[in-house]
Length: 392
Image (tube, rainbow, N blue to C red; front, side, top):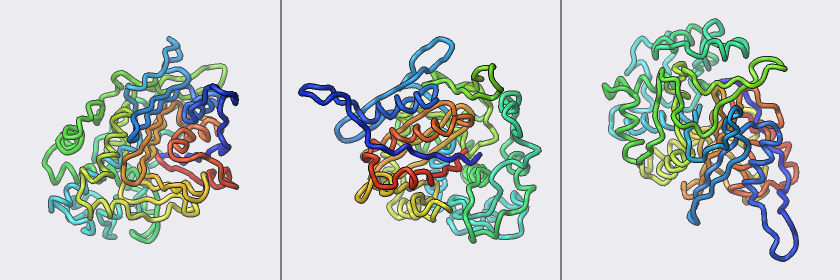
């Protein structure tokens, strides 16, 4: 997935009015409105905490009809899918079906062409050295191809082989680099050890028990039923307008970024995961054991399919760390983050993604941050600019 610099315009949010009885603007809604003014077409957010649930939206969900975004609708969650995949792998570990420090070749012999042993843990934590994505000859090389190649099918093994024809980026375990291919391998691991399709295991072990009725893996199915917002990108030069890429086959991201969900479902998932409903405490602890995201100065750590963001540099001393994942695919950008216990969380979805302007990309994270603290630390803008998410 392409490198996307996500920076936050960190300023103290102002309230509307100062006199007695004046209405106070919700900082999360202010952030959504600001993000639309900066160039995002449509935004939704749902926050959940012990006091209740907050919903917000801004912009339009459909540029043709002018319909407002649907806070109860679905969207493509991109790399937030990785946390679902990682949770299934860790549930297999809890059942004694695998060991995290075993080489992947023990379970999927011959799948990867490299002689170096690569462990399950290294794939989960992006320390395997496996290439990020498909080799250039198999993937998009221009924005126009994002439109014209939207219905290309990739078989699960085919996508891995078309990526691993490239050399390892580094010896396994010696560095860190985000890899979608690694998560496609992990999804195949789930299928191999269960003898069932990935989506069936996802339903039986996560979405069914948690009643996540909006969450599913579409594989080649190209539609987003009841979209919260339609996915748009500026794929052609002006004066041509936005291209609607809601309808898309993202089979290339089988285990890495192909899940469709809703904001309420994602909040419930992270509440259950971080609250200890899905994994034993020791495995949840390993999932939350992070390595530094290079170049981020400690602001970002990556565990086993789980991101940790430190908000101290944005909101000042005492600001919490938040846990979850971000995601981006053509048309959609997602952030779903929670406090460490999963009791307070927010999911923000927006469009566009790939072609968002720097200002649009900077402001769409603001609603997530303001759920947990007020951006006010000295030098916050410079620190936040280092939050580079290499997600899709």
